[in-house]
Image 1: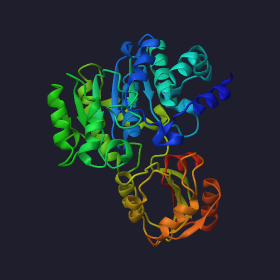
Image 2 (image 1 turned 45 degrees about the vertical axis):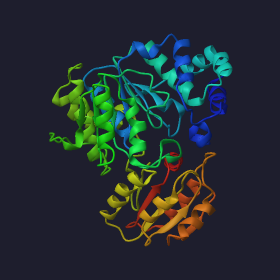
Image 3 (image 1 turned 90 degrees about the horizontal axis):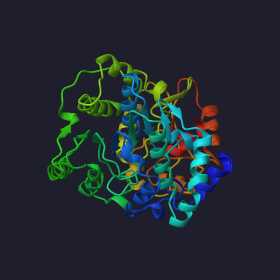
Length: 404
């Protein structure tokens, strides 16, 4: 199979959360453990950093990787989902995994995958571990897909576990209280391995402390610590929290790696160049100014929508699309009523019909037209807006992917 045929086959292997939602969630790590054994446990041959959390995982993982790259270490980076091409998920020093490696890996292991009914995500995690081991990386930053305790990535024993924050997302799998979600995320804390927590609240902190105590793991609450400030290339207001988490994590990693102040400064400033991170308060147009952002739950959107209020503009436009498992009752009240909306459906199976979103939004006095695609909605917003207006594109990672 060529690269496109290989991808088509992988995407067809049910279940895949990105496309499917609920039915794709596996309840244990049996498959992943069998896969790792089949591959001769490549995850045991690499040093890793494990990053979980409701929001900020991708930015935090990328910043950590960027700092390590600046310090001269060959650094693997595993993130999800991808925006444009599958290979974005697996990089070494910012360079995507070659198409041929993906094809060869699938061809070699296809019979095993089929007999074990492995999911898309399980196969991809195995691919990342084998690639990083093959290429002899010095360290790999591994972002959790969803949750933590039962996530396919949770077969590693990292140098440090990182939990960025806890908010409400994927509640049908992870629970609908802060305590329940924190319990799932805290599942990545390993015996004797330090853990860095970015943000916490009165409900989540006791969960983290209890798990760290059970594991005899040293715990650091990054938001409580006074740190030197560094300029950062990522412009989202929420990056202030992520940066604190990164700095505390780097501090822990200094026990293993040689990392200078200059490496930290350059790593934070060159994160986009070093890792290819996109879709985080990213400007995609000027006059009118258009910003896209992958925030897709109340915790993330609150901060982004607050940041929009600080912008100078005459009229405000939203190109908005979501997936069908979002709790619109918690998201839509956050959006401003004095804006014009361009409703669209992201081009994935899980995409919510734009007409349904329009109808739900009207209940919160958010009004606008329905468009056939994200690109059509964005083009119309650009046509309608004057040069002093402001356009925001988002609601889902998959909406952002279609305009980049």
